Amino acid sequence: MKALVTATDGAYGIRLDAVTEPRPAPGQALVEVRAVAVNRGELGFLERLPPGSRLGWDVAGTVVRAADDGSGPAAGTRVVGLADRDGWAERVALDTSRLAKIPGGVEWAPAAALPVAGLTALNALRHAGRLLGRTVLITGAAGGVGRIAVQLAAAAGARVIAWVGSPERARGLAELGADVVDVYGARNTEPVDVLLDGCGGEVLAQGFQAVVPGGSVVCFGNSAGAELRLPADWGRARPGVSLYSLGLFDEITRHDVGRDLAFLLQMVTEDRIDPQVALVTDWSAPGEALLALKARTVAGKVVLTL
Ligand SMILES: NC(=O)c1ccc[n+]([C@@H]2O[C@H](COP(=O)([O-])OP(=O)(O)OC[C@H]3O[C@@H](n4cnc5c(N)ncnc54)[C@H](OP(=O)(O)O)[C@@H]3O)[C@@H](O)[C@H]2O)c1
Image 1: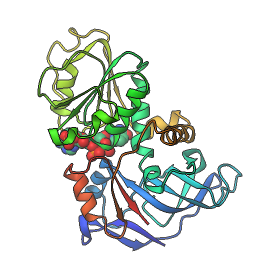
Image 2: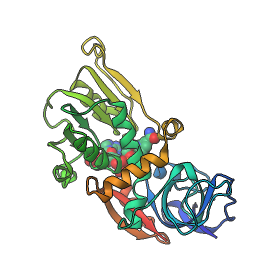
Image 3: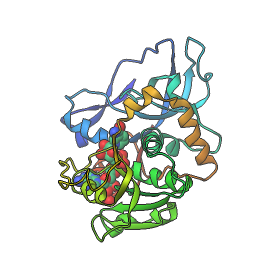
């Protein structure tokens, strides 16, 4: 079968190549892939991994062989799931504990856009605690995780402040539920109970200044790749603030991923969240889409279809 693998000759160091067929373990379903999503974290892997390496966490497709241990959905079921960095392929073996049935009416692309972005946003907000009546500041709000986090926080009853890199990046965020949309550092923000940060560096430091004593800071990314410098009195000025570093593949060891995916899909079918697919392209020519994601010109998720 074919899969996207890292390469030195292809566009953005990636090309289709022949790889061995997956051999599902007893608790894995064999899935024929129809759409996969791209995450910023995968762009990093593309730049780091040696040629011939596999990629791909977000997968939507049809079960072609149910798991041998009897768990999970039957053959023919449309599913979305979280793969172990081998999902950008014609077929993949997915743990039945890490997939959910796609409800009728949800297309392949929005389903594929959900796992990493949706589960990261969901878990980050859970760590922030109760949100009803609280103010949540979300940085990198125009990105894949940010756009879902804005919607989930608003749905949970929070006042949402969205921070973006430029006025153009603000487009659409008010419609998703942001009460305030601001450019990083443009003006002093109101005090916030929760800071959800995917940017790191200077943006995280700015956001931290707005967090009230006893508030929560959840860091899930460092897109800026920069060090964090906080004022010397950061703790004394904000007693009780908690700081949590979230890693999705660590989180999922403690959560029911299938149930969380089903919850997110249910919210999609009820029009309570939109996975924000911004760019869909055929997987045979992903170069331009990947470059657009890197350049931050995509307003949401990039999805590759097979
Ligand atoms: N811990 C985990 O398990 C986990 C899971 C998912 C994602 N992540 C990380 O979380 C971050 C967000 O992921 P995503 O999929 O939402 O990415 P994305 O769609 O590319 O969004 C990233 C956002 O970060 C903002 N940003 C600020 N400074 C940036 C910089 N120097 N370079 C690039 N972007 C910058 C951009 O907003 P503006 O363009 O408006 O500035 C952009 O909207 C990434 O760093 C990703 O690796 C971590």
